[in-house]
Length: 236
Image (cartoon, rainbow, N blue to C red):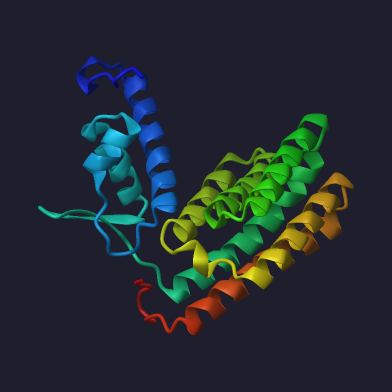
């Protein structure tokens, strides 16, 4: 595998692409490596594993820091920020309004290509559920929501939705998202959204989507309460 070029040898566009790739890989690593709020991010080890320079990884971390998902402490490194139950409640409330609104435009834009995009996202989600790998289920759940949102072609709304997703899934563990009974419910709910979208049933699709987001919010809130987490910051 080719080693990454030094930053000094790169053109601005190439450097931007590398930083974006680092950002994407860091996000994925946080999800799969179970880094918890308060833990230091081993960016040098990440650089080795991703075959990138530490400088590129640091650029990606700076971007995530700017978005508020991690913090930098002088002479100590980068740490994942916690998130409060109030933040979670607010994020789900915003998601509920934003996704429902975007869904209207997505259905208006649906065509044969749109069907293929949403079918692929749905099939991957179901396949992930069959795998039993919780983190993969979470990622494919996000992909399904973002695939549906992408069909709206509303760039700013898509960006905001991505930010809301990252606000949730980069700052608490997937175990708070699902329990075995709720997993079956989530599959049923996503399937209901998928079928309504395929049938171009706007009212049914919005109703199914709102039910799914609301139920997920309730599950996360209940799991937090059951774990007796600190009301000011989730720290596990």
